[in-house]
Length: 440
Image (tube, rainbow, N blue to C red):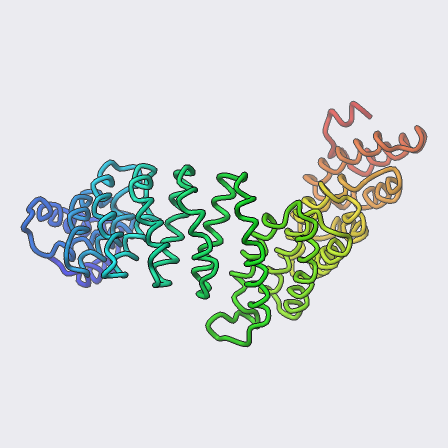
């Protein structure tokens, strides 16, 4: 029997895939024979080798029962290896997984050793089935209620997310635990608590009234993150824990929705976030993007919409193509609720038709179709007809279709309509849908 390091060394020495398969098959056969004997030595070592084989892409389902047996081991090292192997060697749809439920439940109740609780909570997040969720839901909720260890508490919150995703009827068991997570000064615990709340809202939106009472808590937490002095543990490009800030900004879209007083309170907060993140690059852009989403989803004031437009304008004029792409996609969402705000960027959107990136051209084309109306029809049509001969064939087909719809819908006169359609047919150089041509 090879040790794990010897197996890895021998696999790496293989020159062909056939040699590798031969080594793995030989070792698998030996492990399979040993696994039949309940008193066989080196169970943990064999399970480690099975983990390695699984990572290499080989089937290791023959180690399922060995993994289940090692979960109940009193030795922490063996238990840790078994929990590491659990999501690899046992599929979440396997009936064998049900045999692990009692062990996981027992380990969740182990208050003497937080590390064992953490292992069991990880397993809940990795492989928990709906039946297992119902069985261990109360144990996970009790951990959130009783533990003081932030490492365990955050894992319990993440396990709660999986339980609610599989069994939404368990939400009531976790709602009263939310303050315990949100009031924790450990950032990772608060972040996992927000994920738990978001999953609750996703599964049962009508609980928003119960969540709204925590709105002031989110605002207070965000302000503290903005005012905190430099901390190397959480600092990313000069911004304190942007991951937590982004999630706080996201959840405030729900807690402040349809409440004018709360929305007005957020105006100053958004301005503060924008001013603090303005000098930062990618990290700051992520938070500014969350501000745009929040303003778009709230019935915001004109001042907040102006802030959103300014950020979008900065994204559109950036040299970073990712930001341009994000801005154009966001403008499509904004256009469904506030077309006037999108109209302000009309000139920039038209310029994107001349960009070399075809994905930006397509998104600009979608936006042009949304913003076109009687007042700007002539100007936009003129720009599109100039661009049409230079466009890629794929763009020509889409542009002529959308342009024809708009011209027919908003044309000021039949003469102008016919002249424009004829120019469009000529400039398309035959790259036009047959049904569009027949309509013309």
